[in-house]
Length: 254
Image (tube, rainbow, N blue to C red; front, top):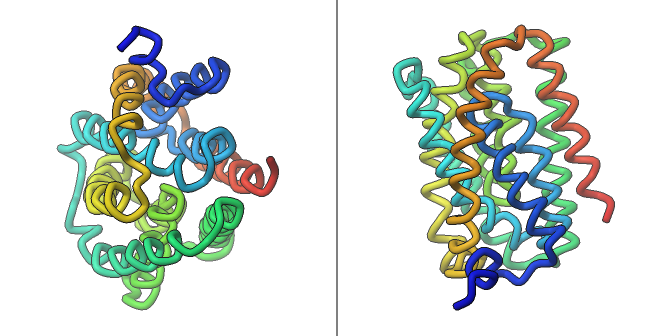
């Protein structure tokens, strides 16, 4: 195997490869707390690699990012806050696995975009109209868990849904990031076998690309952790809403 084959196992054009490596950095920054950036990477990968294939390429990187986030914020995490979301989220993942095997790539990307738009709508409603603690409502918690599970399987897009759940609790920033990292780590780990066996979107070639991406991602987590510490809460939320909405809209165009 040549060096070029090792660093570019999917034989992408070098523009796509370069954007992929830069995106790995932004996934790391996002996992360290600047959440909106990963939502921009999702449709970007869908554009270059196809909707379903892109989800499998990104997933191992997200797992690496989750582990790094826990390295930084595990002392601030409260796993008890997310336990009630796990059962409905698992159901949502299983529903998405079935749907994902029956639709075309174009339909897959549109489903990704719709899921993200719904998540953003819920976030904005809660921010400007709701101001409620969703975790106190079993119905709302189950609904968000189911929706988040579907969104995370169909497009690694559960961030807005889970952000809504934790933002309603008004958690400190470190607790928000650390608790979220546990949730994503658990769900992302559960998704891996389906990507390997059912969708076949994780294979030796994609994992080889991940080996190139993950060191860049780790560097991004250290920089992201530092950046987040300087951003006031209100601009931080506004950034998440804006970039997430734009990323959803981008999925409908190619």
